[in-house]
Image (cartoon, rainbow, N blue to C red):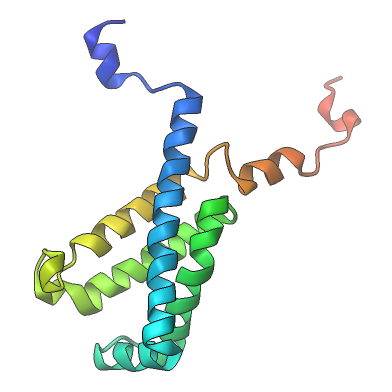
Length: 156
């Protein structure tokens, strides 16, 4: 293999699927932990109040949505279930957090900045575009899903 191929050639499918699985599992841990932390330390009503103070529109809807999308979305990402939908919802949450809360604090997370939420949002967008990979509930459902009758599969 030439050096240029090492830089440009796509890795074998199994390696790609393992990378997607690792991405899903990493994101799942972070989002579930954040959702659980918010629920334990603030409760849904505390998240609603925090979002109200931050100027987030419709905090009575956005607050519970945030907590439960993180709590339920984390395990769904780990399993690879409803992956694209969950990844898009989580990306939206992170972009909202970036816009309404973190952007005014600069980039660095130690100052409350947006670097973490930006990376999480982009990772979720990448996952929404690439899909869950072969090692996922979504892929299993797709493989086991309804197939066209034999008459429709055979060309005459």
